[in-house]
Image: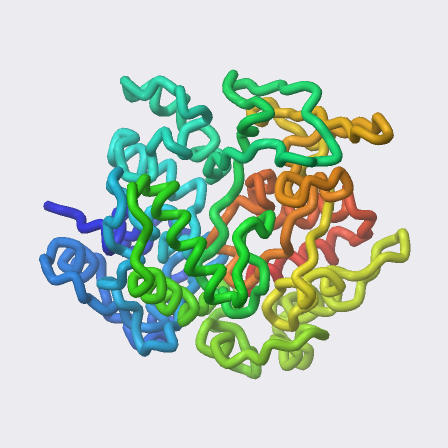
Length: 447
């Protein structure tokens, strides 16, 4: 059987698989997931048929549910369906990669560490995502045997991160004074930065492209077009630039995609009983700043699990930090989406030396004018602006479709949504009781 890159082997491995006895989801909830999707009759066999055919223009129906740890997520395209013949799914480079290699439909249009590990096992580490250009811990990694490949792609397998190489910019007001790289490659000319691929969906709600904002343009569409070309020439190792028509086609496809949680395994469809979850409602969401109100109707529910989502929403909206600073909504200020309304970059400490784990490089940076020293696993925005004050700053990502795309934060340091909530308590001066933390997690899982 030939698996076409336009559909993706990971989809066949996870999303198209029927639930088995080990799945804790009850059959009624499974049926609800199918019922809320017009494409509920699409089976694993249908998926294989789509993958085998030579026709490059299959359409994946809107709202086709994909399983995730919290239930089912889905994508809605303003084009009416998801065109698997888009250049997004085409091999435009020289190493077998497509945009879909790092932006999987069933992982919220990024990758999940769990699905990537399964893909490695099925293909013995030879699928297109496993390339030393940026998939391995070092571009010099030995990938000659299965065991060596498993070690070489450790960050991709364990964190779902791609290695980004960026040097200290000319004229920066700081310098790199020490490097501790467990993979023996990083230097001032090219720091090894391990970052999660950002979702290629819900893009119209943002104003910043890439974690560090390094890709810019006169408009969001222009920046996304530049990003599409840069990714193809970089990640896919294409030797010539993409023509403008291809860039525009990729951007048009991406900006028409909206992804969100469709069904919660504990409460069922998030589109009924007044709930405004799901991707189709998101596609019509106005671009405004302010309070989140997706689940206001859940306040009146007699089901405690439904009420938990509402309580979590209100904690997200209103609970300030103990130091007097803003609630979660203060930074994730774009209502019901989660990006920052002003395109701001924040340092929340995810790349601080105190958070460093053994598999991460550590960089010592010194401000030239003052001699001030800071250590970081990823200097973030500072490598673009050249400003010491920007060390550790990153964009604020969208929060919709979170459950499908673990792990979290730019470096994949939070393995679960419970870890995300724990980080905000431990490092950002939030205070929640155990019940409140569970409510907030329930809300995040329903997004």
